[in-house]
Amino acid sequence: MAGTTLLMHILNGLAYGMLLFMIAAGLSIIFGLMHIVNLAHGAFYLAGVYIAYTFVKQNMGFWPSLLISIIIVAILGILMEKFLLERVYGKELEQVLLTFGLAFIFADLVKWIWGTSPLTLPVPAALDASMNLGVITFPAYRIFVIFVGCLLAVLLWFMENKTRIGAIIRAGVDDREMLSALGIHIKVVFTSIFAVGAALAGLSGVLGGPIMGMYVGIDSEILISSLVIVVVGGLGTWKGAFIGAILIGVVDTLGRVWFPSFTMAMVFAIMIIVLLLKPNGLFGRGAHA
Image: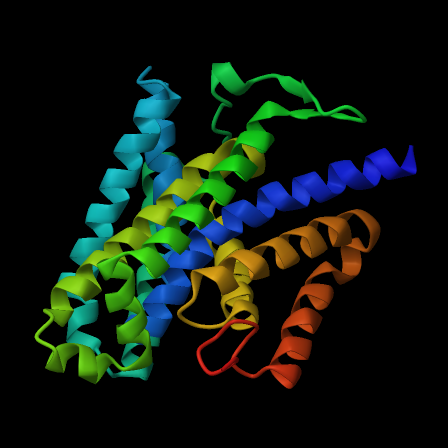
């Protein structure tokens, strides 16, 4: 009985970790490539889930709402990068203040449009069931979230290591000036990466809605966990975000079950240990030969 309960908690942690991976992957690459400290990244998560909720309530269905919300969030990311963040490249303090203020603006807009009461995005009907995994039965939707996260990790790995786009991103993380010297339009790359990062955060929000609920403040909670993952995994690497998300997701979930008063302390303890042993993170540039 204890073993099956532990397995269930671990699977819950994996599902949570995959949600964190989706948002942390974009955050990590934006940090590593663009050198932007985006404290409004959690707002894309918030926008994604609330926009999808609106379309679901209009009987659009879960999957069309998911697609539409991702597109809208990606457009929001493009607009933010082009009209606001582009003006503060290389100015870390201004980036922090600007994105910190944008996070509050997004939160107040959510309160104004949708109110302050907690909401829940319904599980899509096709996945509103349990799967028999042999020793336990587990919600099919959470299995789906784990699958999506793993599939996304494979796709990102393929793009990073097997495509020209991935080579450009890796080169930009290691030496942004050299990328410009090669004649690559760095602004187009920046805008595209920022849009993808925003879209991944929106995807995480929509998929996380049926699991974690919807409320103002969840964006800050998600952002803090994502920042920890970026530090643990290392800047500019999707592999680091994936491993870090699994680690933090499982530890956070088990901590909430067994040590609810010390959960955040455990998460930050992991970050401190990694920083002491590998200041660049587990897979950050310079963390390995």
